[in-house]
Image 1 (cartoon, helix red, strand yellow):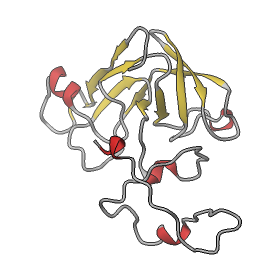
Image 2 (tube, rainbow, N blue to C red; image 1 turned 180 degrees about the horizontal axis):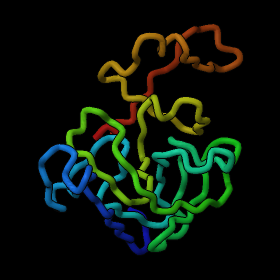
Image 3 (tube, rainbow, N blue to C red; image 1 turned 180 degrees about the vertical axis):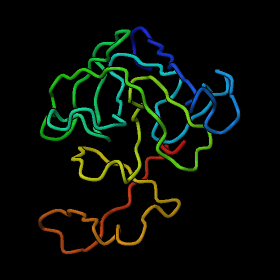
Length: 180
């Protein structure tokens, strides 16, 4: 729905080698590596447009506000760099540069040891509760159709009610158009 030109960025995937051989003993084709989508890695094919909301997947420069989970808006798409504006936190409004970097999945459950060179970002129209912790958000939607809070989370959620409210409850407003 965003106007403007779409930019497609393909990653460069390679299987890790130990002494010239695959670490698992099996060699995988480029196509197989490209199809992998382990958590913590950006997608092989990243389609962006100016204005898209994105989320950073790695700590690049914490002092500059570029931390894992930081939400940004795409301003300019170039072959080797994405120019973006930070949306939240102390550095909100600052323009930053996101380079392509080499990333390796951190999960021990991922059998294929590989490295992906790509922009360390994902589209961020929605995010998990864990990723949103500590962020100040103007609008929030929470899908409670299935349990979302692990032990200890629910006790740390605070709801601000109107100043003159005598009830300790809030009106449940559902926008069905967002659920479809």
